[in-house]
Amino acid sequence: ERIVATERIDIDKEVLFAIAKSSDGSLRAAESVLDQLISFSQQRISLKDVISVLGLIEQEALFGITDKIIQKDAKGALELLNNLIDNGKDIRVLETSLIEHFRNLMIAKVAGGDSELIDLPLEICERLLKQSDSFGLEEIFCAFNILVNTQEMSKRLDSLRIPLEVTLVRLAHT
Image 1 (spheres, rainbow, N blue to C red):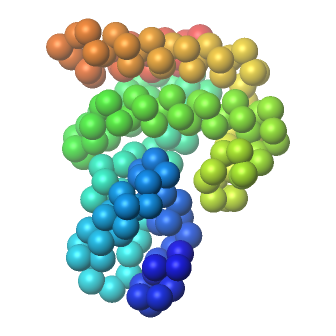
Image 2 (cartoon, one colour):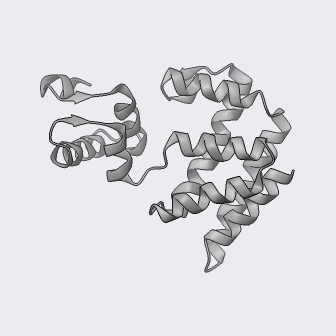
């Protein structure tokens, strides 16, 4: 925040969260990402720029897939997965992001959407709290474990897509 204020860079709070998260607490890595973003976008740095440069998965996609699971819409979940893959998203990043999303749902369920524990903007924490109401805590644990097992299975198979497809169908039918 101090760097962007000093440099008079127009940037949203969400963008700073995404940079910090992608840097795993390393100030040097965050500064490097910020430098890339400044050179990438000439005027205003948007969340879309960060997602594009870092290859992140949009929160909207994670909420969308989870909504399809809640609605028991396996086909819809597979269509969203297909769209993400068609748009060049890395399946490994998607798996990790879904695991983290279900971790955040657990925290929201237990802590009432406390943004200090989730470390995301308040609006996202509120959405997580609302989405967590559709699950029991055991269901969240089950989905989390299934996703972690999928990630492990993906490491052993040549195909990353197939295990995730099976998992999404399984979660939508559980």
